[in-house]
Amino acid sequence: MGALAAAVNRKGENVVPTVVAMLQELQHRGSDSHGIATPNDTYTASSIQELSVKDLNSAVALGHNLSAILPRDQPQPIKGDAFTIVFEGRTYPSPNLSDLPEVREIAEKLGGNPLRRGGEILEKQDGSYVFVVAKGNRVIVGRDLFGATPLYYSQNETFCAVASERKALWKLGLKDTKSFPPGQLATIDSRGFSFIPIKKLHEPPKEKINLDTAARALETLLLESTRKRVSDLDSVAVAFSGGVDSSVIAVLAQHVGLKVQLVSVGLENQPEVMFTQQAAEALELPIHIQTYTTNELEKTLQEVLWITEERCTVNACIAVPLFWLAETGSKLGYPVFLAGQGADELFGGYQRYLTEFAKSGPEAVEQTMFYDIENAYAANFQRDNQVCAHNGIELRLPFIDPHVVDFAMRLPLRHKINSTEDKLRKRILRRTAQNLDIPSFLADKPKKAVQYTTGVTKALQRLAKNEGLTLRQYIERAFENVYTR
Image (cartoon, rainbow, N blue to C red):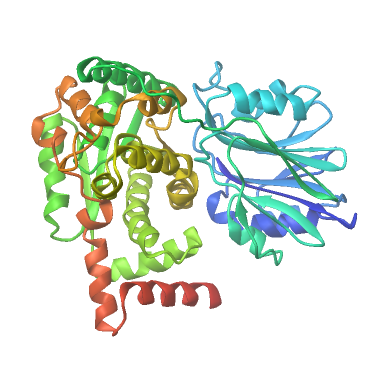
């Protein structure tokens, strides 16, 4: 894990110092090793400063900052068959050999034709990943279907570049940054970007299946998805709220043989945070609860605005508790977190689905849910990865699995939301929780978003009000302060 950067100088000038400068902006995502590559040479060092003095010259270059989450993670870039490569993320299940890092497995699969075989990897390989390859006078870039590993791109008259975070592109004066489209390959050369769609999420036809049968099938799929995502671990932390999503993930992780540590966070004296202690006792799993003060909230807000690179009020309020979870997990010595992201989009968890159901009918809700899962990479996953990576935490999402997603999209809406008055929603997931012997006070706990259960939104609203501002104005001012100081 870590950060990648790649650039092409469209004027044919040396771009290696440019990529080194990009890596300097991304050091917070990985500091265990740093590497730079041209299409023919690779060089790794223990510090960015060593890269800066390396005498490499090329109009095409790749770079990587390593965060060694697991023992098999190794310095990058590496050499392939007449190309160099950086790989960021994970493949599922993990490589067959415990000492074989994903980057070498992918390099072998690319063989002598990274463009054609890169498309085959995106088509067939499950995982959360991006890769960049330097070959000849161009770069080849690929991103998996769901886009849980962030990647951004931009260009101007001098540079075409991609990076794990936008700040590395901003460093080059590239302001019009976009998220690299999931499921696509791109070639980058002096002419710019050329995108090749490889794999796209499609809404399948609905199937007739009763709720009990569907719940059993979902349990099997989620169990296998969890197994694939933890096959290289003995223990794991679970971001735990006491709700149905995180309870199911925690129990499944235990079922596949892992030692599970629940982690919950929030502001001091929050009833919902204290509820997680009861929930953990009911599941017979250990929990660590970490609380924070309002002063710590203000400091964390500044940090997450810099990390997430957005002034969005909702994203800021969600990112703060996730930052605390990652921070706590890191201090406890758990480099990998499991979390329930994706469940609300797949199974109808959001209140706004109920509102749309009442206003526009079931077909409109299904279309909105498909749109939400298709665009979750931009709305949620990138933010969550960036916050966790900053704390040296790898986030894995069992609900975001090709088989789980396909199955969920085939279900009739009534198995998710059974009426316009359905205050619980996520019916099939709650039935699955019951089948897993999760107590009903957890399986049937109404959804309440993390920014509210932790007290973050209300506390920020109070801080804003004290300064005569709306919450949106308060967040925007804080963002401007972060990026202009």
